[in-house]
Image (cartoon, rainbow, N blue to C red; front, top):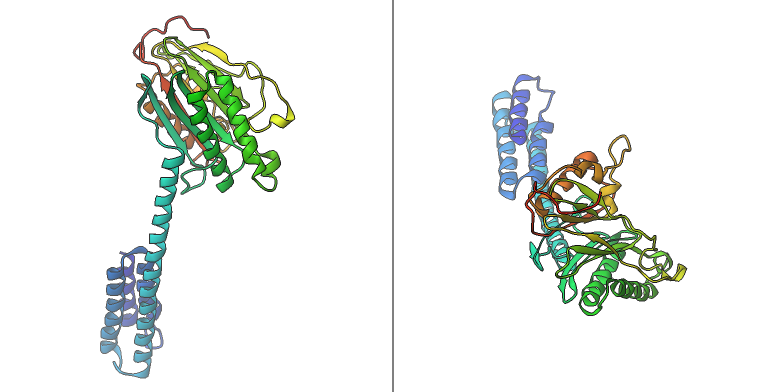
Length: 358
């Protein structure tokens, strides 16, 4: 309603004030306001109405074809024409932005496709939240694959941001998908990712060639066994949420360097194992979750927030977590966040969880 109110205000101002005062600012403001906010037809209509109303008002207060009246009418008409041009340019910019967003969405789907809701007999849900407004993908990653060796997963965080981080994400996920199928052990999968990032580092310039790395957790759920194997490369440890609401953290039992830092030290990876009973949910995440801060600088504590709570499934878990983290940080997240939740069907939420440790 603002363009219309400006025209009405201009008409009243022109009618009620002495001749030496002018309402031109009101009439010129109307099409300029309409230009970036409305379509071309509405902008043209606003400009035409502003010119006509101004001329009609002058018919009742002074000479309609005086130099003053014609100057003011031409001024409003000129600004209205400029407003139409602005509208056209804004619409073109919006179209280019929409195209760029479509390309970004396509890139995200290609690099980080949404996993199926059920893979290898497990319920799966993933969520990616970019810290940068309008962004769709950054340096966090996740992938799930059903293999002859069981369901294998990876969640990771590439150092840095921008297109170089996205390129590294593509390298890690591509290497993981191939290695997950071919390698017989999870430790060997981690080794393949290490070598893939080393090769990528030789092709990158500047600081990234020397300091590029990726923190990651790799997980394997072998067939026919109620357990999960983990290899942690400098990443926040996953959480295991049981059907009765209890929770267990799974930190790395042996510290290890992130992927891509093999030149600083070399030792064999050792997978750790944890019970993964029916009804339990394995939650893997990046530090965008655990390092989200509120206005007082307090970190979001996923263990405290999730302890004692039950969720109907992985999709509800990641949706609730995402909303609570954004609320905790006031919508101002400083880092991307990736969440990947895997639930083993079995005991219903709220039922007992067989034999697990604290």
